[in-house]
Length: 488
Image (cartoon, rainbow, N blue to C red; front, side, top):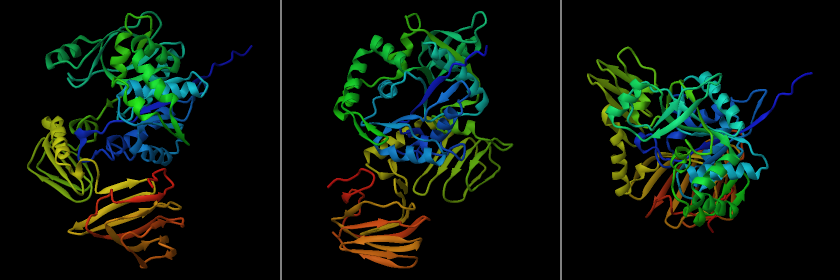
C-alpha cells in the first residue's frame, strides 16, 4: 500500500520595514536598502522572495508571500515582485513602524483569516545568502519541525567575533535528530565576550529568521505579550482593504508597543511550555547592515578592492567603491568606502561605517531632501529624474510605463512645459485632450487641470520644464488617481 505524503502549506512572510540609514547615500527613506541591487542584479527584497518561493517541493506548497511594509513602499514591493514573476499574496501596510512583533502579528492574523493555519516562513527583506542550497536544506528542516508545532529559528554559524549581532546559545542535538535545542538568547556582546563565544562553540548569530505556525505565534504572544496581541487585533479588525493592499487602523496600530519578535516572544521560550528548536546555517549569510558588510560580501580583486560601476583603482587596497552615475577613480589609498550617487558622495574609512547614521541625522535636522529621496524618484506610474534646478525653474526627465497614467491634477505655484522625446503621450490640458509624439510639446499654464498618460506599448519619456515661485513636490492637488492617492 502506497504511503500518502503529507503536504505542508507554507506562507512566506517578508518583513520589509526599515530605512537602512547606515547605507546612505544609496539607501534613503523613499528607496531603502531592501529595494536596492547591492550584491546582485536583483534587490535584497527580491532575493528574499525568490529564496522563499524556491522552498517548494512535492511535500511543501508555498503560497504567494505576505509582505509587511509601509504605505510609501507599497508600489515598490508589488512592482519588484512582478519583475521576478512572483505574485503578491497581500501587502500589509503599517501606518507607522512598530518593530517586528506587531508586524508578524498582522501577518499571522492575515494567514488565519484566509482559513488555513499555515507555517509562516518569516524573514527580513534586507539579508543576503551566498549558498542557496544550504539555505533550502536548513529551511526545509525548520518547516518540518514547525509543522509539528515548534517555533524553529535559524542560527548562523559565526566566523568572526562580531559585536553587532545577538547570539543564540544552542544545545547540541541528541539521538537521531539534527535539530538543536535553545538554551539562551544573548544581547550584542562586547569584543571580549564575542571572542569567547567564537572559541567556545555552540554559539550562533541570531539572523531573525523564524519558522512557525500562525496559531503558534498568536498563542505565544497571548502568553507573553497579550497587550500587543489585543491592540494589533483591534487594528486588524478595523482594517481597510484595497485589493491586495490591507491597511490596519492607524490610531489603533500606533498604540501597539514597539517590540521585536525576539524581545516579545522568542527570548522567553527556552524553559517555557513552548517548544523552540534551532537549525544551524552556514551559507554566507549577511544582513548588510553597513558598508563594511557590503565590502565583505562582494567579490574583490587581488588587492582586496570591491568595485561596482565605472571605477578605476591604482595602487590601492581593501577599498569599496560604488559608482552610480560617473567615473570614480582611486589612487594610493587603502581601507576606504567611496559611494557616489548623482546628488551625494560618501567617503569614509571602513572602521567608521557605523557612523554614517550621524550624517543622516544631520540631514534630518537640516530638512534636506537628500535624506529621503534620490535625484531619480520612483512612482507607481514610472519615475522622474530632476536633472537641473535653479531660481524659479526645474528640469525633469519623466518616464511613464505603457498604459500607465499620472493623476489628474493641478498646481498653485508653477506652470509646466512638456516635450515628448520618446513614445506617444495622451495629454489632458484643461478642456483639451492632445496626442503628442516625438519632438512635439505643450504648455500647462499655472492652475490648469492636467494629466499625462502613456497609451502606447513602449515607455513614454518627456522632458518637463517647471517655472514658478515654488517648485516643491507638495504643490499638487489630485482630483483623480489610479493608485489611490486622490486628495480632492
